[in-house]
Amino acid sequence: MKSFTNANPRNLPQAVKTAQQARAAGRTAAIAGGGSDLLGMIKDHLVAPDILVHLRAVKGLDQVAAESGGARIGGLITLDALAGHSLVRGRYAALAEAAESVATPQIRNVGTLAGNVCQRPWCWYFRNGFPCYKAGGNQCFSVTGENQFHAIFGGGPSFIVHPSDTAPALVALDAQFRIVGPAGERTIAAADFFVLPKQNAARENALADDEVLASIHLPAAATGMRSTYHKILDREAWTHAVVSAAIVLDMDQGVCRSARIVLGGVAPIPWRVPAAERLLAGQRVTPELAAQVGEAALAAATPLAKNAYKVPLTKAVVRRTVLELVL
Image (cartoon, rainbow, N blue to C red; front, side):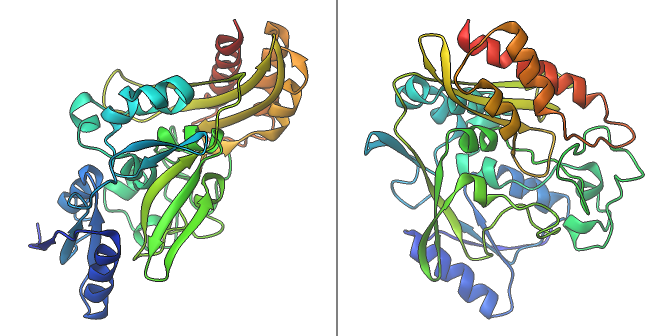
């Protein structure tokens, strides 16, 4: 492992400036929250920073606060603290459930919300040093290779799937992301934060190199809002979703006023399915309607040679998760 220097800025502007100055001097810089994914990438020789800019000394980035009827969540809150927070669990169950489903207790005690949202893909070609799009190359080896866990929506030229559990929940909950960078602050919708390969095959989100995901803002929860997150794994521990679904329903005495359905494990970004959502709007939810919603959610899927099993699996996840929220 290459040696590197540690920096411990006291605030976000200082962190951004430290990274910016390092790059201006011809050195590589990496910003670390919990650092679990970053450390793994360093050990695997996927990145080799000259300086690590640690955010742990920045005050207040690990808190949850009620704000304008909704909630503000610091990007450095650990996944364990997020999953157990009473405000989050009470109003935004999908996010709490997604956070508690990540990896292992040891990782959840260290890993942060921002880190989970911004982690790099876990495609075995990328993680094992192949010169793919994500590593600066010019091809996706999964297209004709081992693609059992790759995208069935939104793929091309890269067919990675976004690995975050919390990201689908945040998109389903209509979150806003506060980003801090050299030019100051900007706010972007969670749905617009993630980037398809056809937009930029080398990146997964809209963060610039010197920007930090500082906090997440959730809107006020409607009186009839119900949400949940369901995840299918290929083994019991420390793994990412084969498929998942974050679903938010606004219910009124058994009738669904509106729905947001976001899939995970099936696309390079959290994948929203508006056609399936429209089937629920204004309807009383029945097992038959839930099955139709599952079918509609997968109507546009285009599986690769070895991952067609994800289509019926995801249909079943959507159907079951919708029914769990109303029964």
